[in-house]
Image 1 (spheres, rainbow, N blue to C red):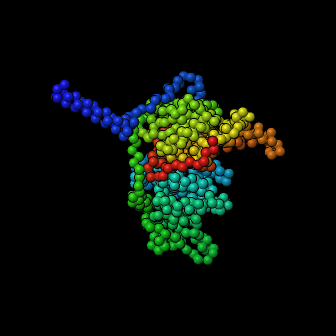
Image 2 (spheres, rainbow, N blue to C red):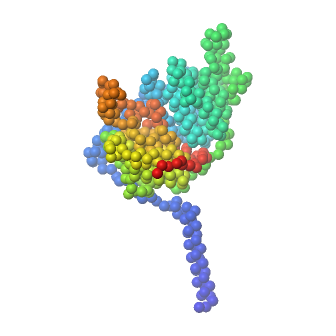
Image 3 (cartoon, one colour):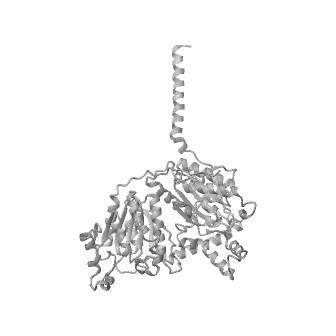
Length: 557
């Protein structure tokens, strides 16, 4: 072989070797992974089926009821020259920024009163480019009075803000606690004073606390601005004092006006309780926007590794209405639901042939890879072990988790066959894995949320970053019929003469809107909005740096 021919062959081999190495390097760097599609899932609905027609009719009525209940809780301002809470939020947030209102049905029909939205609007949106939590009291309803449910909703907002490191903006317009219910507001560690502690702790963690006083800030409410990093105050609207003019008059005989006692001039010029003087509400809101622009807060890049794509299958109101079964206790078509929520209707199954009551696998949400757990029945031994494996694996890979929960009543495992130690032990392992995992966790209760399986599927007690319910959801230990049957068989414990009344009460208590009014979730959402809401929540969870390192405890084998 001639020298020139050997050189040509060597040059070709070198070029091929370099090309091969470059391809392998690209795979390691993720360029090939970024283009990899997951398998398609789901199928098109046949609207001619009678079951689809029945579902569509029933669910359309249910969704209409949802909108009617929201419209029955107006938020318009009843005070001349004062902005309503929605108007304040609109002026504060970035133009065209998406906003998510949490716990809309809180306080809807409490035993002590109807308290629309729990008398506070808690919204996540963007201000000066930063995702922020706005906690705005509603002074147009009974002077912004704080009820027990107001405290509970606010503390849940603090919990979400702290877990996701979201800056907080407080728009204070409140006359203080509702005194007839002071025993339910004041004394315990998870009552009113907890909010002040939360502000201090979040500030120490580098989570900014900003307040605008745009109304009365009376009694305990006076500590909200004074425990904030920065605070502004609106002239002739905002006031801060522990006791108002009537109490001062009663205690000392002194007559003093609100402005003299605790107006903006006093606290911006003399006491130093607030930092920014605003002549009008709009000026105060603009000052607050400028304050948020100075935060200099570190943020992660939330640019998705893969371009987002809409689900291949329709995800309209009608599509979900026709898909969800008429009977709440029926199995939900979870793969069809997954196909209408996640990018491209694609899903990479994990352990698809094992523990079939629990679907686990990977999907993408706005380009971000997420681990999906969707149960359609009770979690047995296989399902619990499968779930434990999957949750731990996603935690190690720092992949966010999405739980789609549909847990029927626990009748099967009440039998002598199902009520064994293996089931309890396996479920306990999954609960421990979910509880200890520090990756973002988003939960949607699709249908039933009964018994211990609901804990393992990241119910409220397991503290997900966000948790929502569909209107079809039912949350309880067991169904009303099973509960009353058990009660009638234990006459030495339960003295019940009117089982029908108890059944009716239990049926009402397990409904999604009833559980949501007590803030057991972050809101009842319509199925066709699920993708949009989960996408926004995931962006919020990923925006600010957080420690997602997970340490698991002892596992009983």
